[in-house]
Image (cartoon, rainbow, N blue to C red; front, side, top):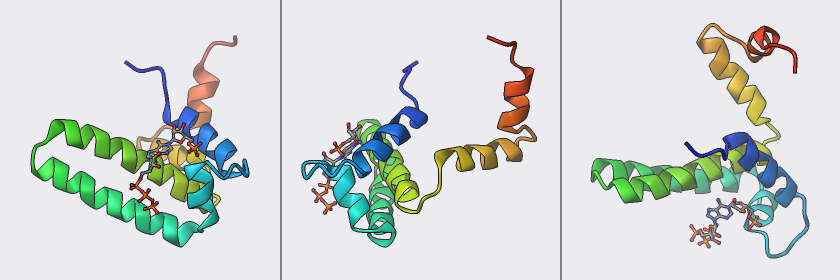
Length: 107
Ligand SMILES: N=c1c2ncn([C@@H]3O[C@H](COP(=O)(O)OP(=O)(O)OP(=O)(O)O)[C@@H](O)[C@H]3O)c2ncn1[C@@H]1O[C@H](COP(=O)(O)O)[C@@H](O)[C@H]1O
């Protein structure tokens, strides 16, 4: 299991989005605005759907990585934190992140 998480990637995206680095693809995407970022996400989602329909596991793995990256770029460009999405998902299971943290033993 990889130790790299979506939260790690979201943190990288936030830093790179506001880096002002002309070589940063993330900065370029975020500077173009949420609508353009969302359009790019939609294109990547279609590519993922095609890979899945064709049962191409290697392409599906690569396209899924693209989709997750571009989803996080859309969230960053829209000023929606990944944490809000995770809390939404946790709420659907009947658990919230806060309850989970409270049940952990103190460090
Ligand atoms: N996961 C990615 C990632 N996936 C794809 N890409 C970039 O996507 C580009 C290729 O995409 P396309 O061909 O679909 O896009 P394009 O035609 O070049 O451009 P547009 O369609 O967007 O105009 C390449 O430049 C890749 O580098 C990514 N660029 C960055 N990341 C992550 O973001 C981090 C920060 O990257 P920078 O912002 O570039 O420093 C990296 O360390 C990675 O973790």
